[in-house]
Length: 137
Image 1 (tube, one colour):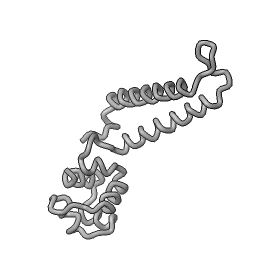
Image 2 (cartoon, one colour):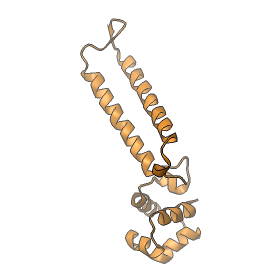
Image 3 (cartoon, rainbow, N blue to C red):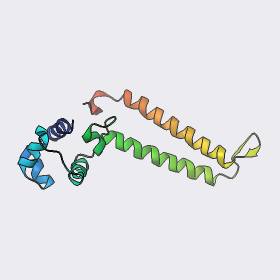
Image 4 (tube, rainbow, N blue to C red):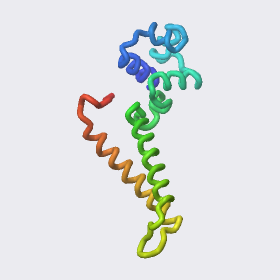
């Protein structure tokens, strides 16, 4: 799985093995061995490759769903929105439910619901991303 993904990522950037190896700081032979599947990278090399292509190490190893640049951006966006929502909750003076101030448990429940809502919305929007913006495998 790693060899296939590495080759696909390299080709998506229109890089030769020589160019990619040079940018990553190792020999073309080492890169060729990775792409042929005759050699496996150590953890630091795996991290270096993941960072270069802006993907997760899990994606490179074929674990779980793909973690492309879009997915990483979406996760960061969700985290940012949740943090802002939490700050708004904490700074609200008159926030109440049924005439009573919100308890910590109610605030936590509200945050969890908001996270679920944001993730579901993100998933639905990703499903309908115009073809020219998709990063299909």
